[in-house]
Length: 111
Image: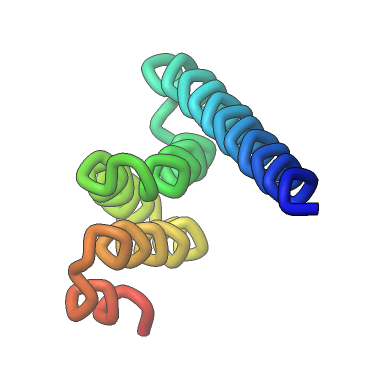
């Protein structure tokens, strides 16, 4: 009975690790895809949305980079008077600060 429980636990752990690795690969593929489009993007609302997606996708692994992309999105959204983009950019900025452990700064962007 103990051996079957041990085998079950090992199978669950291996399956969980496979899922996590697959998920990380998918996330990196999406980031790579977004980064390939970024240099060619025009200075418009689509670029703001692209920067927001990059910021959101980078926030877990590289919050410093996420903050950089969010700040660029904030600047461009402000320049374009793109209010919805500005709101989402600020949210992404706050999320990156939160993940970075800077909770007080994060609160400033969630209000």
